Image 1 (spheres, rainbow, N blue to C red):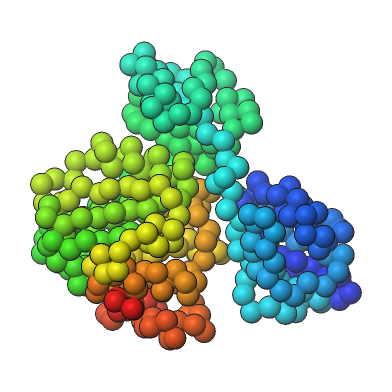
Image 2 (tube, rainbow, N blue to C red; image 1 turned 180 degrees about the vertical axis):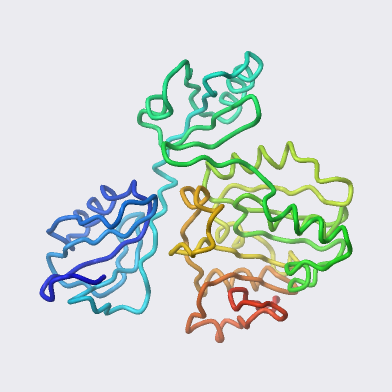
Length: 343
């Protein structure tokens, strides 16, 4: 936030490059700004500085958009909480298409899946991805070698990634951090509140075995469709239970679950600001739900969990202790926290 004129009031937002117009609409509805949008450096995720027409130092809610505002004068931030990303999932139009060199069988599969998922099928021909997308935000692209979720900037596949190494370690008799912290054993029921690409869920499914159960909730429709398709085609072996993907807001899903109905609840929200080690998660960030960890989410999770709630957070929040969150034992970093269930 350096380089601002001392007299300029600025609100800072962090999020995908696609949402400046959504910010402007937010301010028009709330009447908080009469100024120009000043984009940050070029990247897929960046800061936007919005010149304010009046000082605002509070959390605003306007229709379906919510964000903690940052009020800056002369480079001094006057709020303690950094701005959230805006969840764009409701606005994202999805289509189904193929690669340019897709075989006849691949094209037929794409058409069938478009009908099954309820998304428009768009013939690719020899057009670029940008021309194929037109007004759509992302496309499920069926290629001869598999399915890819694509935008004009990124491509995302269902891949085991780090889960493959973790599963190999478990097969060698080594203990995985999630298994250790959650004290997972065969027959347990696990609720993954942030399914994403399903990597923690795959590890949990191996730990609880065929007699256990793993439910994974994903709030972004594009991600939910991709991971559901990937899990359906992935052979996890007889030693794992099947993962049941659920589409929805995990907080709402948790609110409908009975007390102590799961042994462990896992919450791994996407950090609002990308870390240096994000690497392979760059494409995932285009679709991941930016909802931040908050006390109510933890309370619902503790009510549903018999044993443990495991949550990831970049920094300790002032309310962690009052909600029972303590640093997870045996972890080298302080990003994972644990609270006892049954609250």
